[in-house]
Image (spheres, rainbow, N blue to C red):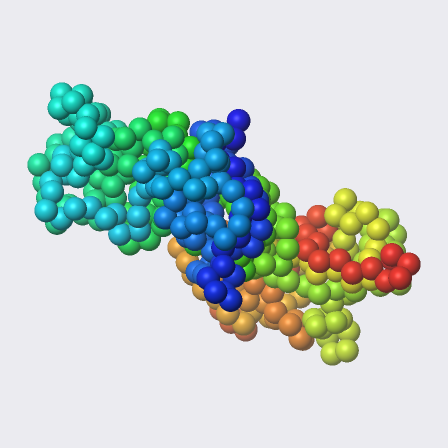
Length: 375
């Protein structure tokens, strides 16, 4: 069942197009993330859903009801803002009770609802504290409790973790998902943080240049991006613009070469592509190769892979749980990422090593055919 339907929504600010013909459905009880860079239109779309902005064209329905022209207070949405928007002159209890007082809820029921909401976010002992006496994470949980206290049908989160430090942000990601699962409320999170969206979401909608670039489960969006924009925005990526060779590999796989990469002067990098990846050879293809899909060895790699080459390291970065490397050919570089224990001793720029990857690890993003469809 769809909790929210967004149908052909566009929003223009004069000549500036913030959103263009966005269509998507958010399912009942789903944790859905709108992911994209700054200025892509994600906060604009969230504000349209909440009722703070009207679309230039298109329709919004919540729970099967067309709410396009309804004001925010008639949409039954709870919203948590980036700065939490707590009332500084009210204590925690009063902040959470604010929406219930507007609804004129009886005093005893109001008290029970506030206590229940604070218990949900583990802040029942902080009811009498003022906002300035709380940490960033505690203020964020008060804002969530206030949004949930009115028992909305939809919870809208506008980058609520962006003001927290890295450690607290990760802790609050787990807390946010725990709360959402326990309550079972349909939730839309706006974020520019790829890791946050991947770890929290049932599905992700990637926005770019005002358009929905891809819609899917986190695993699919990461492993099978719909286009170059999505591939470059989510995680690190190697992009290889390759053209088909005249010959087909003896195994039945297709071979491509990358003119911008040379294994030695005048000799382009060539590699094997599985027929499970491409059903036929095309004239040229833009391939994606994720850094963690590349294996690396100090000495000769095991036999069997056609896609193995000798390279020279040009950069080594230790990032705690992994080592990020840049490996150079005679012309061109690849980014590689391996787990921390992979090397007993950290390698250094100038070291020569061997790399390899499987044909299935090359993901086609853009395909060009010649006039016959293939070479």
